[in-house]
Image (cartoon, rainbow, N blue to C red; front, side, top):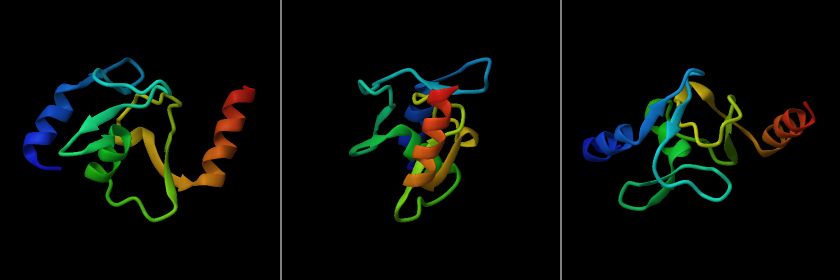
Length: 94
C-alpha cells in the first residue's frame, strides 16, 4: 500500500479492548469495512495483503475475532471457502 494510502488507512482505525482494529469509516450493510486506495477495496483484504502478503487464488479472509469490521491483520486468516463456511456455521451455533 502506498504511504499516502497507508496513512489514511491507519487514521480510520480505532483499537478496542479485544485488540480489534475497528474500521471507523465506510461500512457495508453486511458490516464489512470499505477502503478507497485508488479503487474501492475491502479494508480487511487490504490489511491482510499489506501486513501478511498476497491472498492466494481461491482463498477468502476469515475474521478470527468474528468482527467483520475488524482490520487487525493478526485477526485475519486466508482460508478456503469451505473452511470459512465451516467456521461461520460453528460460530452461529454457539
